[in-house]
Length: 232
Image (cartoon, rainbow, N blue to C red):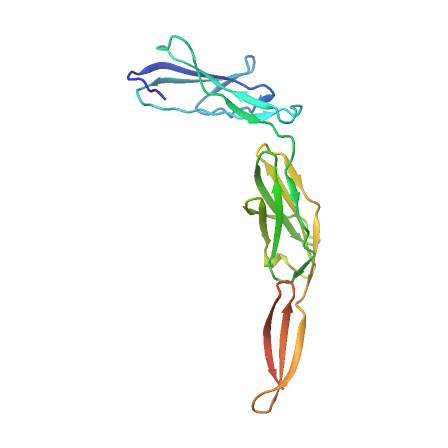
């Protein structure tokens, strides 16, 4: 940002790639160019009038050999014709985490046919959980479908849709990633799927005729519902 009252000319930003990282080719924005010899990215922004702003970005990947909790420090050098010396930006510090997220989950073992199944897990990370994904499939099928798990605090929830819950059963697992792309994956779990239990109840109507009432009991959700009434 040019906070002066005059236009500054030939504005150049130079940023040396931080230690313990590797530049991702083509990631520099706004026409920035990477010099592999100096290990720097340079942007030539031209002139900036009073009050004008510009911003630039680039991406790096953290080297595999970098120890856990290593700080990654970065700042950029800014020059222009009007400045008598280079100006340096503020430092940006990122802490390396080689520890994947921790997933705590009690497997679901029983479901009811064509009824969606809620999957919950507590997921934590020493830095930040970036995403959690629930993968599921009908038993014996090839590819897993997926759904992003929403969260309230550290509790993450995903729903296996009803059309995936067949009498064959359901297989599922959970994957979580942190903000440096470290991933954790649970085992693959199996959910047995059954039909609702049915109870037939015999009685008399007010007019003296026989009646049979068929009830389904959904013990999983602790609900019950009358399915049909059959007059004898």
